[in-house]
Image (cartoon, rainbow, N blue to C red; front, top):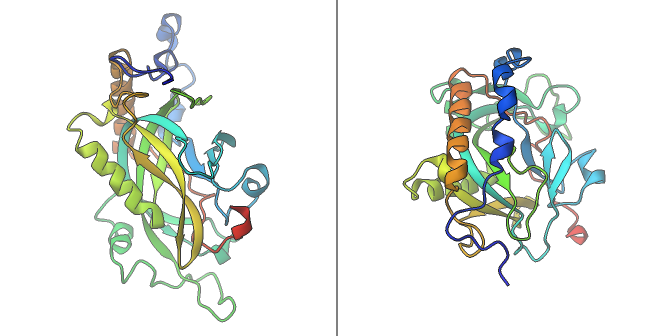
Length: 282
């Protein structure tokens, strides 16, 4: 039996959580003025074989966790068929970062430099296959006879709003969260962009489903998120009319923050590269 069959509207994206009650509207700015100088949204993280403390002890590989809250959203499905998350999209932006090598952990911040400007030197190097991994990190000595290099990386960032549907439930329904794709997952972010583009509708009117799947290449095994159009017998691909205005408001807020360069993702716990994991753990 299909649960929560949508006819004809999609499940609401928790509109009550997106809009303050009427009795608060006269005081909506109280205590929030300074926050506008730095918008650091929560971010979805997939726990990897390379994940360090506290992720490797608190969670299992392939789990989706919201940071910095350190709360699990979905446990990894070994059959890789169960939908991990249903969500609506809100806003998209590029960011280009220069990453220090893993050997610099504890000595330097993971992200050395970052830019929202596609014409910046960081962005130009990230798009150049010959230059993105060609600079030696001056602060880190050779390790095991190998020089340590900086990495210039393009991040595809999506602000999304999870919601409950079918058998998928999350305590983060209605909360804007960043879903970011980079390096080996960049192509998956590009595919998600394509899914949105072919809708020929506002980005804040689209709904999708996410599934965690295992990837393997010559560097090892890791986990990534595949985004697909939802099963229409469970979730409508469109945001419901009762939630559309709230989603549009969120879009405007994030678009403004991006234009003012106050929207910034915290990538500090993101692993810099994929390393072989222990196959018995999968």
